[in-house]
Every structure is written in C-alpha cells, then in structure tokens.
Length: 505
Image (tube, rainbow, N blue to C red):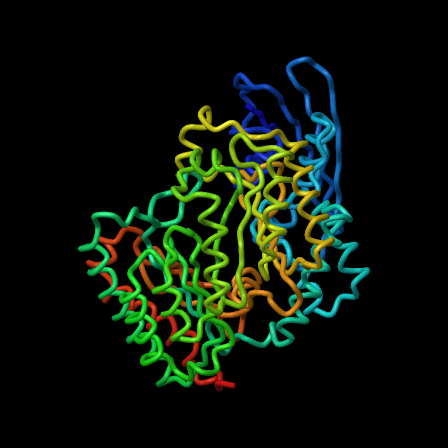
C-alpha cells in the first residue's frame, strides 16, 4: 500500500505512520512532500498548534471518495521541543488511525499502539497515583485502545501485582538471562540467535567456555557489590540442546559464581524442543533444584510441525511431557501459536483438546508474527496463513478455553507484523506464573544477558531509564569477544549502581 502524505513537513512522522499503516496493509510505504508520486491514497493533514493541538486528516483514495477524521489534545504549558513533537505525533497518529479505519472498515482494538509492552502504560499511570477510572479513560482517549483490551490490561496488571507485590521496588536487584544459541533445527518463523547443533561441537565447546567466563565475572561483581538475583532464565535457542554433562557443569558454575543462589525466587530452563529432552537431562535439572521448564508443542498437527521445521512428533511432545512430570517437573509451561501455516479454527480446536489432556501449569498463546529475518517471511508465498477474521476467532477460542480451565492471564506482549494486530498472552494457574516473564515485560529491573545473542536491559535505579546492550549473535563473534563484552557490561553496572547514592536493599 502506497500512501502519500501532504501537510506534514517533519519526516520524523514517517516511521510511526508506516507502522500504523502496516496494521491495515502489508508492506506499506509512506511518502511525504508536495510532489505527489503514484500512490493508492493521499492523506492531507492540517495541524493547528496553540492552546489545543488540532489535527484534521482528509484521505482520498484512487476512486476519488473522501474520508475525514480529526483529533485534538490540550497543550500543557512549558513543553520542550521534544515533548511538543511527542504530543504532536500522538494526536496526528490518532487522526491518521481514525481516517484509515473509516476507509477500510477495520477497527484496531489496540488503537495507535505499535509497541511491544502495552501494560507498561497502565502500570505507569497507577504508579503516578491515577485512579483506575481515570487511567482507563486516558488510555482510551490518548491511544484509542478499546474497552476490551483495557479490561485485559487491567486483569494482567492486577495479577502481576498479586504475584509480585514488590514489582515497583525491584530496581536495586537484577535478574539473569543465559542464552544458549543452539537448537536441533531452526524453525521457519524464528529469528532468535539459534544454530543447528549437529556438527558444531567445536563451536559449542568454545561458546560454553565464554559463557562460563561471563558467569564468573558477573557473579564476582554481584558479590562485591552486594546485589541480589531475583530470577534466572535459561533461553536460546534451546538450552537443553547441549549435553547433560554440559548442563551439569553450567549449573555448577552458576551455583559457585552467583551470590545467595538458595534465595533466588525462580529459575526457568527452556526445554522447548521435546526432541532435546532426555532422562539424563531431567536428572541434572532435579539435581540443581530446577523444576520450572517449558516444553513447547506450538501445534498438535503433525503436518504443521513438519512445515515449520520442527523435527519432532506430536507423540514425542506428549511422551516428554509425561516423562518430565514423572521426574518431578512441577511447573511446566507450554507454548501454542495461533495462525501457523495451514491452520484454522478446526486445527486450533484440536490443539486445545490435546492441551486439555496435559494441563500444564502455564500456557503462552502466541499469535504468529512475520519477523523480518525469518524463513517464513522470506518465502511468504510458501506459507499460507488464515485471514484476520479467523485469527481473531482463534484468539477468542484461546481466551474462552483458558477461562473455562481456570487459567488467568498474567503477561502480554505484542510484535510488529503480528497477525490480526493481536497479542501474545501468558496464562497460568494462580501461583504458577513466571516471575521472569513479568519482570522482562514491565521493565522494572535490570536483566543481565549472558551468552551468545543475549540482550541486557539495564534499568537506572534512580530514573528508571533503560540502557540496552547486546552480545554478538553468532558463536564465532561471541567466542572472539566475550571478554570485552563482559567488561563493558560491568562498566555499565558500575555507572548505574555505584553512584554513591543507592544502598542495596
């Protein structure tokens, strides 16, 4: 979809307007300027910025019909240039969204939001002391979020604060993410740093050497600075792709290097690929008192698993679930994906019926996202997916099913190019929620990423500002530079936590 914009001179509007256009159309292109290129539609904006900012939008498609919308917002006194542009962007986006809705007939329940973490907005308003009714009204007016989605956000925020009553007071501690960048095979929708492990033992050995070094260095800093760890999450890739012996040595390193390990609130290991789970690896998990794992079917349709590159069977998923349960894994998460190629409501209903036979403690329902670097995105014509209406119906099926089986929503996040402009929602039995998932989504605590492709988010304990830092994504680059990257992370930690003002709790 080609959209020509007139009346907006500032090109900082281009990216946000393209993101909103992508909610309605695939691969939109937004052009600015008075010279009108060949376009499917033209939108003329008028912006008045005085005591109130008023934005009028007129959309004229090729058939000559006219669609209009407008939005306004009172302008607070004393805004900086940056704040004034942010306000303008929000009001322009509202008028833009509404005129596109009028044209297409498609209503965006998340309004103008294209970011990953909607619940952060509600948390922020509540931390600032807003009453619920006021907070909800502001979300609706400012971002055009629907009542349905605001209600979902509130349920999730309530659950998060019940599970983590100190959520707003975690900034003096840290959580740890440990990334293992290997899998049996790479799934077609995946863009995580993940490499087929077969034939790469040399890379695995070198990588694990670097990872152990990072763990020791960060552990030493945490001990010296009396910083506690709230949660540890082993992700990837698939952390159970490495051998049982390698897992055992890794967990031993963590126990020796990190402070106060016995009081870490939660440790999770992604065992997402059932074909990596063995009795020997489960024994290692038991040895180190780890009982929260993920075993991810994604779908219970064998043809789908083959199409997306998951080389395990449906029967293997079920078998490994029962094996893990029988060996003491008491908190098992399973992931399902709505909108996988060739699947509609019939196939998803079958997947939910199979899930009912297992009843994991938590269930994350993802909506398929066409991530830019994935095999699925590069070859879209090969992967036929359901339309928006059927995708929404499948999400409603998931909401109904989880409610009927006593799961409660406790975190959500969204992605660009997500089917139906929907969301990913984590459900759990009360008391079985993942603390790490809450912490990473609400960005209330520093998460130190260790390993290949691991991302760190450093939260300033005073201001809450975020510094992002990522390790190299491929094992060779990581192996060449883990000493340098560990030192850089320690430098960031020193700059945030050793200002002489923040006493550890």
